[in-house]
Image (tube, rainbow, N blue to C red; front, side, top):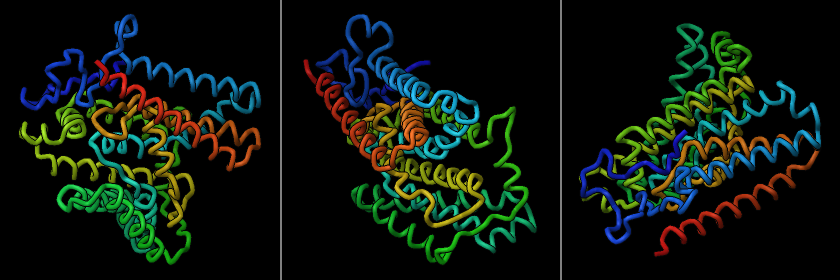
Length: 360
C-alpha cells in the first residue's frame, strides 16, 4: 500500500501551483517533506517508515494484551468489540484528516455528532420514518451534520474567524441545541428497519465496521487519487500559492468542513445503532481522541501533509490501548494519563521530522 504523504502536489494543478522550493530538489510535498535518505528512501520514504513504526506499536500493544489477559484479548468477540469501538472514532478521524491537512481543525465534531443523533431520533422524525422509510432518519442525521459543517466552514473561510474559535463556538452551540431539543432526555429508537439494518452483521462482521472500512477506502482514494485531495494538500501547505494557481481556497475550505460534518452524521448513525438511543451526551470529548489519532498517524497539525493509512492505524492504536486497560481493570485516569504522554511524544516526533525536512 502506497504512502499517502507521497502524493505529488503538482498533479492536478497548474505548474505554478506547486509550492516547491527551487533550491531544494528533494522536496516531496507542499509541507516540504523530504523522502527518507539511503535505504529507507528506497523502501518508499519516511511515510512508509512512519507507518511501519505505527504498525509495530500496534503489534506491541496486542502482545501486551495477550500476555496480560490471555484469551480474553485474543478472542474473536473481543476483536470485534475493538473494531466496533474504533468505527465511530475512525469515521470522524478520516474527515478530520482532510481538515487538518487543509490547514484547519474542528473541535465541534463530538457536539455535532450528538446534535445529529438527537435530531434524527426525535419523536417527529421517528414517526415520519415509521410512516415512510427509515432512510428519513439517515437523511436527517447527514443533513444536520452537513449544515453544522457548512456554518463552521463559512465562518472560517469567509468570516476569517480562527478555526479554533469558530469550531469552539459550534461545539457550545451544537451541544446546547441538542440539550434543548432532547430536553436532556435520552431518546429511545423505535424504528425496526433502522435498528435491523445498522445492527446487522455480514459474514459475522458488524455493519458499522464495514461502514468504517468503506469510509476509509473512499477517503484514501479521494485523498490520493483525486484533484480534491491534491488541492487539500496545496491549500494546507501554502494557501497563497494555491490561490495564485487558481484554486478557490475559500470554497475548498468550506467543502472540507462540510465533508467532516457529513461524516459526523454518519458517526451519529453508528453510535445510535450501538446504543439504540439519541442523546446530547453522545460524543463527549471524542474530539480529543479524533485529533490525537490523526496526529499520531502522521498528519501535520500545521497542514500540508496527511495520511489516511496512518490515521486508521492511529485509531486502532488508541482503541486497542483502551481495550487492554479495560481488560486489566485499570482506571480511566491511567488511560488518560498514558494517552496524554503518547500525544506529546507524537507531536515531538513531528517537530523533529519537520526540522529534519527543512534542514539543508
